[in-house]
Length: 288
Image 1 (cartoon, rainbow, N blue to C red):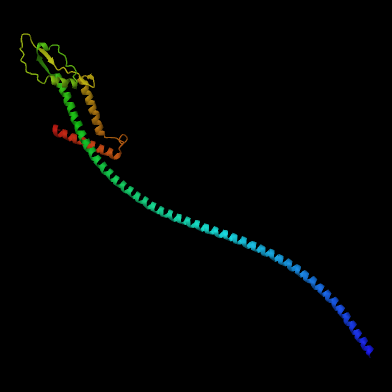
Image 2 (image 1 turned 90 degrees about the vertical axis):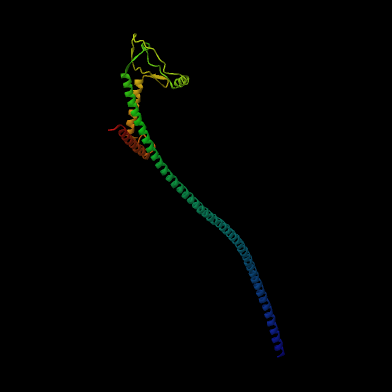
């Protein structure tokens, strides 16, 4: 039994030794497996850590770029906001200036309109006064023209009366001629020379020698340095008066008067009134 026990114990020791060897071998295999697994895990973890690090770096870089871009956008928004505020302020100032300028222009336009109304009123009053003055002057001109026509008629009749006269003169008057033309200057000098001349000399007449028949010898008239016959000047004077009277009766035409129809109407009405007044005055003085 003891041998069996020894054998049993030896067998058990051998089994424990084998088991220990196998356990050690399996342990080594397991340790090696675990070491290889841990190595793979460490490598994968390292790779994952590196990947995470690169990802974190990229995320940090993206965050920085995003923050920088956001800061630029914020700064652009702030600058744009300031610019918009400045533009809005300028628009408000321009609007206020436009309102002030519009008010000023409106006040100026109102002042100009009032001044224009005042000038128009003054012009109407002046035109009315001018019309009245023109009508008055037209009447005066008509009266003067009618008086000149009467004077011309009297001059013509006086010339005819003097030409028809005959009288007896001294024999010394035989062959006498008309007086030479006398200008205004010569008449003035002659008036100064003959200021103290005495007239009314007594002349003795010899009736046995007879007398000379004399008539009216009209002398020439000096006008603008030229000597004209008195008959021609009277005819010219009559023609001028006839033309003036015809123009007075006709009145001014609107084509020839450049002052407007109102002035032409004033002149026409004034001339018509002057003609009527002159005719009435002539009739009242001379009779029908």
